[in-house]
Amino acid sequence: MSDTEKAFKTTVELDKFIDELRYANEKELPMLVAKNVLAFDTPFWLRLAARADICGSNDEKKDYENLAASIMTVVEKVVRKTEEKIESSTGVLESILEPITQEDEEIIWPPRDLNGIVEMKKVLELKEKKGFLDEGFLSAVTAQIRQARESGDKPGLVAILQKVLQLYAAHILSKRSYAMKDGQVVKAEMFLETIISADEDSWETILRGGLVYGGGDVEPEDLFNVLKKRVERVNMRTESGSYQQRVLLEYLKEIEERAEAVVQAFKTSTI
Image (cartoon, one colour):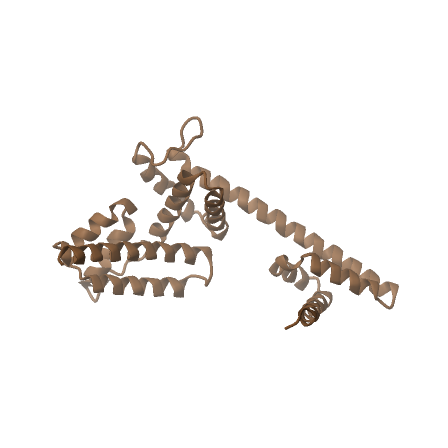
């Protein structure tokens, strides 16, 4: 497709969107704007201005001016609400990190007192119960991790924020147990739930002791099968593409990768 064809296609799409906005009623317009808030970029405003300039009457031109004003009002409200959510999420995050925050507001990682992690977990679970750990919170934490990685000079902060997401994932995934079926214990499910609820630092020890290679009673294949089922349940019960889905799946993926490494180590040692 040539540049001319691309430009024409873009113009057609913008005109279609502008017409949709023009004919939306007072109730539909705010929802339409909020849903497409990222679409109001420079090309959009230039096309809207061009449409206004070629109007056949002053009344029609006035309609475009009113439309532009209405869009700007909604966009400003959406931006302000987003900023408030980020600010609120930052406050929630600070309260979760408070148990490991020093008097000078510096956070030492890993914490000198491991009880700090336990207290972090308690605060996080309380905040989740009250509904504070929503998509806004998860997106804010994820954004801070990305920023810390990009800066490259805050590895400790990345580890701290990742721990928050791990605690969140462990809490959510532990809410429902699949370890009992028809009155019988499903060993692999119980083993997985033990890993999920444990601190990441103890995963390797648990895996080595629980798998048959290390004297346990869980076959690696059984563990990987229940991990697969848990992933399927997460995909079914969370919104596709949501931060919650992403965080839970990443946590399960970490467990799977750690299990694969342990199994490989056992196999290598027996060769």
